[in-house]
Length: 131
Image (cartoon, rainbow, N blue to C red):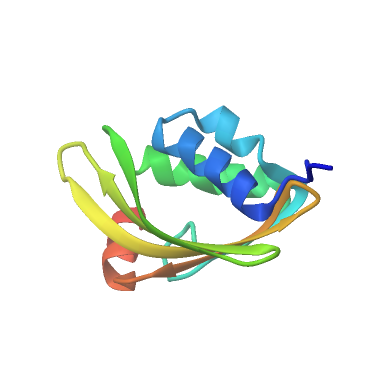
């Protein structure tokens, strides 16, 4: 008998595909209602985000602070039973283009992302652009 259980890798593969293609609403649909987001740094968007509305609000605010095209390159993935780490390069276009290297750690339960922890390779650059 074939196992049809959705794994953390399945969820994250679908999520990163949507986000890389700029299909934000499709990506946000992977979030659990009670998701918790941990955003590092000292910028106005930093801090703990509780619930889907706050996490989506943070992502929309981050996108708004980086006008132009946003490109997400998946560099590597490390996966366990319910945690997936994505090492990504995010490139932001607009009049002052910049890029960030990030390690985003996701916890997946019952087929939805219920926690995200962001780790910046260069926190000062992230704070400067999102401040």
